[in-house]
Image 1 (cartoon, rainbow, N blue to C red):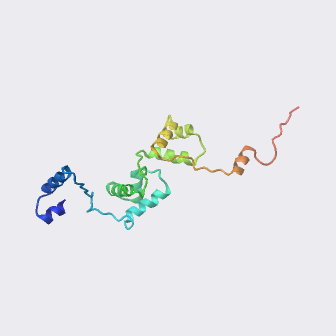
Image 2: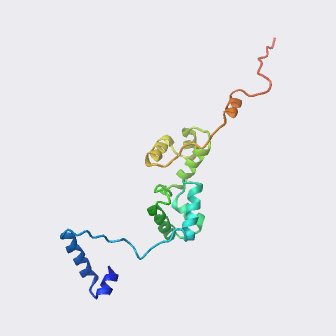
Length: 169
């Protein structure tokens, strides 16, 4: 609006009044948002670094992301919002605030322990409800363990000498 005001020599308030009047008369008024702040995501070094982190792991807090990239919180948040708005990064990326919860979810994802044991280890009484809440929010916390069938069979029946009960008579 300020460009129109400068071009025609009227105030921004008058431009806004003209647009509202046109809208009342039935004209379609399309006002592009923040055209002055075009952001080239492909050329931006910060955005590319955020994309690299997003490819590795989606369980991270904004504070951890800022520390990892060694950036100020405001700058990191602005670039992250640009990426989320354009669809390069999931809207769920870096939304958790608790670093303890992130560490617990990562540990759960890569260990074979049940949720109750993982929860007790990190100080959560009902870790299973946290898991279901995160799933409901759309954050994937599925286990990343893919045991081959051979290793599962080895665990069930170890190879070597079979167990023989000895009688002490």
